[in-house]
Image 1: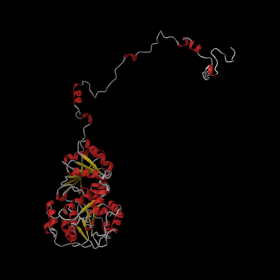
Image 2 (image 1 turned 120 degrees about the horizontal axis):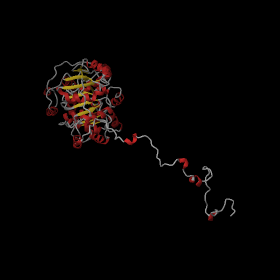
Image 3 (image 1 turned 90 degrees about the vertical axis):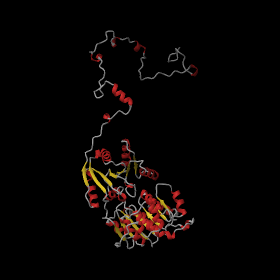
Image 4 (image 1 turned 180 degrees about the vertical axis):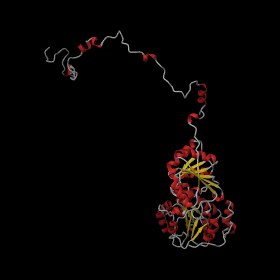
Length: 479
């Protein structure tokens, strides 16, 4: 791999990009290039394969999409024929949320061009996606699983793809995505430009990625796996039973008007969201068990500030771009140290300051050590004195009738309640003088009873007309 050392441009106007792209970028508000954009855009414009490693939130999407759009513009067509709009650029993302985020950015960059963009991912109906693909698109953003579904249904062909991008390449090349990725790459032409971008690159991933790239240029604008310097990181030592109270206390003390709280399980996300709602916070959960429509609706509500706390699993750790998000909280220390880098990358984006808080118990010591080893820095550790939450009995009455009852009642509710005392139960036993002993009672009931044993059932009576005996006849039949 080679490294690029030429003088990098500082502003978008210094790039050799089409005027229509520069116009869209200016409307979005981009003026200064980020470090990854300064170094990667000229290399991609030259047609070289790139492995780009940069901290999350530094503009990697623009770093690969702007030069690709510029290179595709000479092939753009205003024709309505789908044949004039084949897929020429393919962007693969590991999660639905990241795919949707990347598509939104690319679509905004290409708004003044004839290039068509589309996004396909699972969890929703394929029919609208199929209709859009059959109309023709030049830039396709997709998750691997849903893209394979469309390929097998012959809704899309990739024979004319010139650019392929693996966003969050460390996860794309993970063992879970590698089989699907290999199948997709088999549909692509051999002559193509391949770009890999991610916030984290392990040595194993780098070696594996070289099998897909041809003489790539490695672009690292920061120390590998480093976290943003503008994000303050603090670890709070708390007990397992005090994590919920600690979370409420930290949200209040740090004045986090909006935050993402990361947990490790889907069940834990739903449970914590319900608890926060009971505490008066506008909270919603986001995890893999939610339908794609529900996840997108939750994400839109969070972006509109209709949701204060987004409780999420690692499906929200990559690709979510929330403008000016004050901070994130690791309610659970992640199982994978690399996920920590992506989690805290949701805050402090585009040069803004951010806050990353982590609640750690005694059993999280190894996980914290792995995180510090990965990011090659120590994290400030504080001990949090969790404030005792008031008991329900000490809280204010919920309704006016409870308040009136408390004011008018003269009974001390804290005093033990005793049953009324009846002196009759303390009197000794006294026999009834009028009662007759049982052995002197009349024996008439016994006389009236039959002399036969009670185990012998009486003969069933049959009417005379049916052959029975008239009353008074003895058993022998003599009258």
